Image (tube, rainbow, N blue to C red):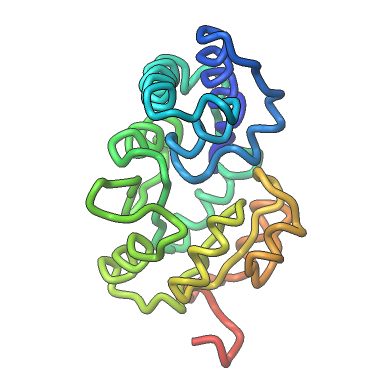
Length: 217
């Protein structure tokens, strides 16, 4: 829903510059992010500087930097506000699941998507494995009292598609996000969606859950 790429890249590059390491083009960060901050740091540091001290120092620094600058450029993707309004009008339950820290995920949604309600907003918690482990997705299904196969899981990365399939949810790849159609399909996308408004074809005014092929659920 939110295009966070520039602020993540700028924050990490600022830390790399501070510590005397090479920076990376913003577009390269599409393939560095998605599995949490620790993974991001390990992806961008030079391979000969992956010792625990450097990783931990860089992780603390980028978390501090991102906390200051996460909203500089981040905003909803084009078409997302209209999609959320349409889903809300249809009373479709909505949940957010992120590998960003739980408290921070809630702050981001509340600040940048204030006009829409979500039944559940969940980020990474120490007690729960991160995506692509399906535990958090299945917890959301239980809390909403809906079978996993009735969920449209919309994501833009290999991690999202893996999570959806592991949880038994319908994996829909968003082509306006971070990764390519080829990667989404290779990781189990059941369908690809070009524009946010195309999500609405999965719903109609009488349905509160996503329709599936008859043999899916």
